[in-house]
Length: 156
Image 1 (cartoon, one colour):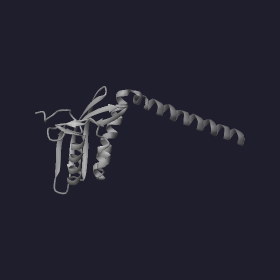
Image 2 (image 1 turned 90 degrees about the horizontal axis):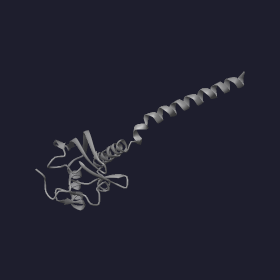
Image 3 (image 1 turned 120 degrees about the vertical axis):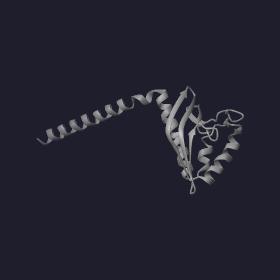
Image 4 (image 1 turned 90 degrees about the vertical axis):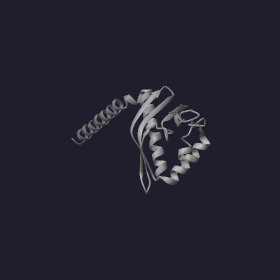
């Protein structure tokens, strides 16, 4: 009798684990789509930038800038100074209501940016003329980077 209970228990466990595996595989089927995978990676990138601002980690942000970053006349090095000033001024960045538009290996992200410090809170619909540097992305070797709008000056 004990042997049949163990066998029945084992069968139930195997069926339960198999069911969970099937449910997991079905739920992940969308992730095999390249565009869905890119959306996930872009959201992770944006989350990492939010976290870097909250932890005052400039290097984590700079690591996310593509080597050919260029935005409103600022290259990667000049943009690192912009981020350094932001980190000194703001303790929080929220990238909310994200809309990701993917064009193969490039993407544009529309979102509401919220920057906070002790004195005030800045709200901006991105991409904007004042900021916008987080909105333009490039994928290289499967990794998404901030790329900038590649314009010499602000586009009005």
